[in-house]
Length: 172
Image (cartoon, rainbow, N blue to C red; front, top):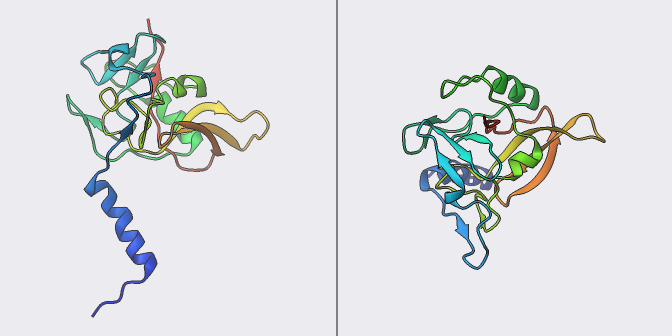
């Protein structure tokens, strides 16, 4: 008989979560902050936010757009490497991708939903994870701002932490 300690069981459960899936929870009594109609599907793995004029990659870095959804697991980067990843990104025939600032990143948080706090029709297969912004923390040089998409709130982390990345570009 194999004995599995508590930590091993927890580790096994953490690996099963992506396999088993999860269900986003949304409160119908709260007005949508990012309704699907606010976004124009550019048919190339990007959407344009009509309200802000920003063009977003529908998938996080490390995922691939398959025409209807995002495949694979998102990659994680330190803040410096996230900035470099944005700089070298070439997607949808564009080369001006960048990390959004904290205000821009927060603009895609769907406040009526959690786990994740984002419109999954617009940004499919988004995990309830932390996503870097380009905004450094003013009072502490070793930190940068991010959004935790489980509940949709802003947080700051050490710049050498590994977090996910969603890229944006300015509209024309």
